[in-house]
Length: 169
Image 1 (spheres, rainbow, N blue to C red):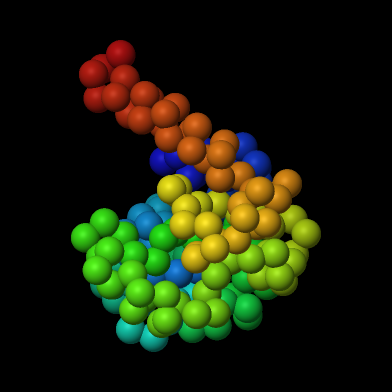
Image 2 (spheres, rainbow, N blue to C red):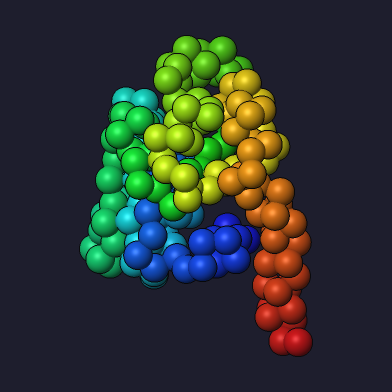
């Protein structure tokens, strides 16, 4: 919800946009795929072989009409992106795999060069905390087109709205 709010604030829409996730086809990717099952947009997951998202979740988004691509080429994937999104390569419960994942995910770091390939209007998102120098560089996360900090703030607003809705307020 916070990511969708952040996109609305900075891109102006979700429909008919291109969102490219670079990294592990994990829970964040599945959330984006489920959003694509409700709102039509172009979603690309660029991940190493063996780290693709769940095929059933991909099919749910595709059958709803969104354009969904799974690729192993982040440089090709980001071209024309409205948003480039990344996350840590080793999530909670995977820290013992961190060194292995650093090797497998070589070439999937979001840096200034990759953002340049995305185009001048592409925004960077990351759900934080970031492992700077691993999945994202300092230069990319601190760039003017990085919206990771407004995205983090929007988590509070989105969670408050959900709580108010659930409480009937």
